[in-house]
Length: 163
Image (cartoon, rainbow, N blue to C red; front, side):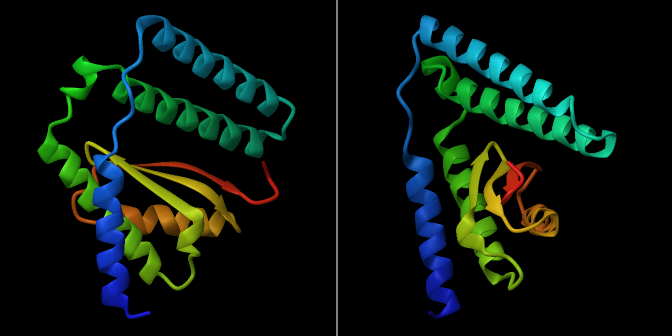
């Protein structure tokens, strides 16, 4: 497929994905979700405790990264007050950043871009999905950081077979 067609499709997909909004949460749902995130984080940290020290520190960092991403997503869904924090212009900008990151990953021959999910909120890019190796994770983060408009990159990708 022609690269320019793929790039246009990635941009359109990014705009379509950014336009979708989740229903606001009630206070009880918000509290339950916040508690579930905290419990999941504690469980993930507990599972890291039995690992060798070099793997343990990486496991702790991954658990914290996943917790931050889950909290950010929860805050984005918190309702009208949270929805007002991101303007339509920011949503469009985030959609464009998502599309640019996806296109950059597609153009990187060493990455299987279909296995990496990209989401953007206020310029912060979150990469998730399953990849073949730690090298692929590092390369994907590096590619995303090079895209204009990206403020930071959160990595919640997992190496296949190491979950």
